Image (cartoon, rainbow, N blue to C red):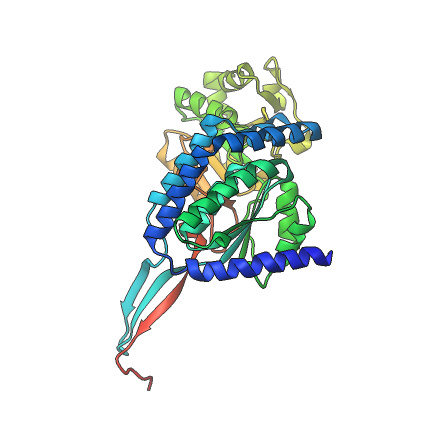
Length: 419
């Protein structure tokens, strides 16, 4: 790796560690002021952000990005209002630092408390979505962490404009600007530099496609919170309510196809299909979704033959794989084989079937009669998220402010000695 990138990373990392030490002791009021100030700056400077986004969209279109990726990148006044609102929600969220998670007394006379603490310095590597600049910055700040942001090359100008507003909020609140830093170059060598920066970064969170996340998981020397793919399933059980199922299936796929909570595979119980016919598939086709399937479902006009790799594929587009299964156990077996441990939803009015589904699957998020599009920290009431984690160490599911903390033990005695 080029020495210049190592030097840049060292400079950024050194500043981040110093800022993290200060943030760990920052008051709830000061962090609140920084987030409210940043939200006000984003709204006041929204035209600068839109101008930057215009340049980013032109760059992305010239690169030939897909419609779904362009949708992720695009900003308008409503989406900027959404960023502002999200910052205010995070500002109002209870401070996760300094909470007493557990406490107990020992026969020795010791009183022991487990207390939440910041992780330190967090690196976030993301593609396309400029709103992540605000979301990640806000959540890390709320949890008392410094953050180093490396946005995608497509969102370079949008992210710079939003980042300037985040730093304005920090300045006005009397907190160090270095608490939220943005890598100042599109060069991919800086990704490698971050992944190897064990001296400065405590955890890496990648947000992007399979290529980016796979690279991070393979090459990172720093611990990683991530999911590789969002291969989300919806299973329509024989005891599903038809109208509920129609609403949930359509929303799970079509609300936003480019998010990781978008449904990529629909499993339909044979008895549901015998009773209700092709209605779920027909709804998707009418909405403009390409339905890739096999066997009996191919008789439905408009469907296309599924290829072997369509099951277990993250389309992030108006495409879904569909299959008939014989009961909940066959649905579970399919999800275990093809899923990515992200989000699965069962549509059923049968409590025993629902219980079996959630007990026998180990995805980070399991739902009943609800759209997979709810796989989002903001929708969970967590004040937003920095990503979804599908691993089993430390953080799992939406990674919000609470998940960006660790803990330490505070032990109090009274001249207590160990015999």
